[in-house]
Length: 507
Image 1: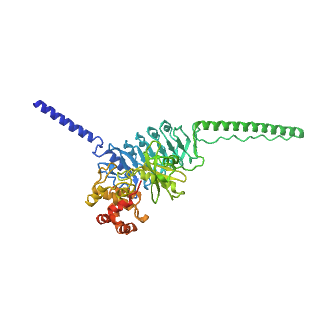
Image 2: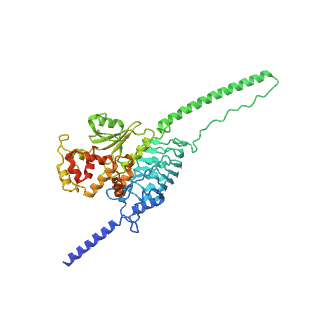
Image 3: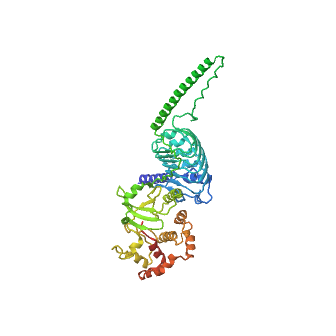
């Protein structure tokens, strides 16, 4: 009996030690999460004028709740997204300690200094976008260690030196953009489908010389004819010199033309493409967000047939569509955008929206951009809007009487998913509705920006914004007085629910 007790005690001790070992596996020697240490080091090296990284705290245990940080299901930092945040300073080599990173988006800032060689430790990295900064120095050869890299954007910086040969080891590249830097020398053979190097005047094709300068022949110089007293011999010598020079010049010209044709044929066979128009073609490479062609979305919506319209708004019309694989989507076709400056603005909006991950937000799944079109693709919500389900006798669908009952009984602590199962509490529901009402205020200048919406969804500044909005009377609030009699009991109970009914629409 005592032997069994001793054996059981040993098992308990072993399990406790194992749990301690597992829990400390992700900690640094000082007991702090190693990812927290790395992120704080990155924050320290950057200058953040608008305090975007304010909640990056060394005393925090879990960095997954920090702004601009995305974690994987197992709790490791998998994405770092800080585009267009007016950041400056330098990029800390500590980024190499975030070994689970799959996406790094730092474009459209003013970050300077060299690209740290430690970035080559990120073996899981798929997207690296450092474009439109002021990075300088040479490209680190450790970039060739990123075996899973798909998208590499280093354009519009001040990088110098040669493009590292190690990039030719990356076989999974889809896009490499090194345009508008100060790179020089020959290019390695990179297997990317899109390879851009425009705006680098000293760069040249593969297997070229180090200085890549053109070689021109020395001009032909003939000694002056010796003048003799005999005019006939002088004339004959002059004719011989002219004939010799003309023959040599013609032969040399033929050799130059043949050499030029051979060189052009060699360049064509190497399939190295350059943008001769030197126009920057902005592309968005955002992990889960897919880029559709206009033809795909036009076919999916039956040429944007009016029968597929789900709703209209101030920014455009929403259509229902069916992709080739049978997926049902909602396609928002934007209107009234500025063609001159809309491309960069649209790229920034897509980048920002794609980083918004919250269970109260419908996540962007794709986009399309052409010279004259801007489209966003969202998952289709088959249950329609709350307003259409609350109002009776619309499209022969019954109203949700149980929702009315919940409202009348003051039980706003339930929210339903597609299968009508409750999953939200009252506080979350009220906060979500408040954010939605702020985004649909009558005066567009009073509506919050997307960055402010993300902060409010995280619980930062929502109460102040909501209190300030209540002091301004708008036609939207006054319109509640003219609602039909059938909703009078709702107005008496809560104007908040009526506002939620009015703002909701098909997606």
